[in-house]
Length: 123
Image 1 (tube, rainbow, N blue to C red):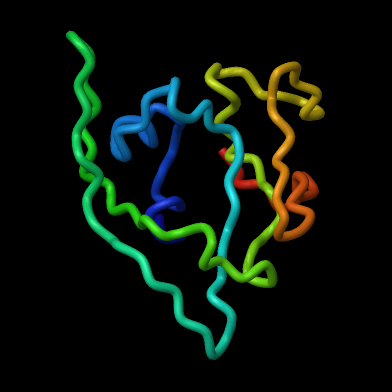
Image 2 (cartoon, rainbow, N blue to C red):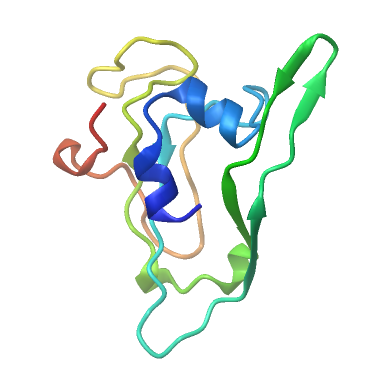
């Protein structure tokens, strides 16, 4: 999604509903920013997230999302991983990021370890 869409979000619940993201698809907690390097182009698709329904549960959708091919990303445009401030599937603050079961992000594009806390999105 565009930064302007991300900045409007106030909670994990709002993100899940507006972008129709089930917890089993993404446990949340982190994000990356990508800036298209000067003189480069990035092709993708932008449009409203579709609603999702599972039995009696419903996610509204409607948030403007962007879909792109990760192979098209240029490493110099990627930020370090940042915390959303919403936690990982709970309403608790995660403290020093010592969470059991959170996978390490591995990539052939470079080191995208967690950014310093000062760069994290505030609640």
